[in-house]
Length: 166
Image (cartoon, rainbow, N blue to C red; front, side):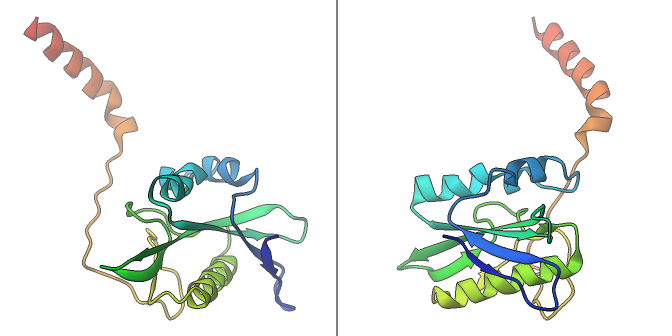
């Protein structure tokens, strides 16, 4: 049974589930700003391959429509300790949400979850900075390339190089 909370002043409900709802991946796929790593299979892979505990934080409106997702993975090791990450092994996997207030509520629920699990810290791997008292790391660099615009130019050149080698 998923843990759920709906603050009296909020139009949103947030639940934490051990498995994603059936509409998780469809929600991610329809969002142009979404990282592929937010698809549920990546978090489930962390559980199946590495044995980590995985949680799916979901935000819904009053009608029950999925409006936000946030995967959280608890990692425990003797070397690194007990901590949670919005998605380990990848840099892009933070909150994906239609509404800033809902994103903050989901992140607060993830913080409460991490505290309840005894985690020493919780790291969100967001590509945007959300408002609030969240500490932002600046020691990582990311590079995004848009291949769709260049693909028509790259593919013929690659084919030409392959033909020249023959």
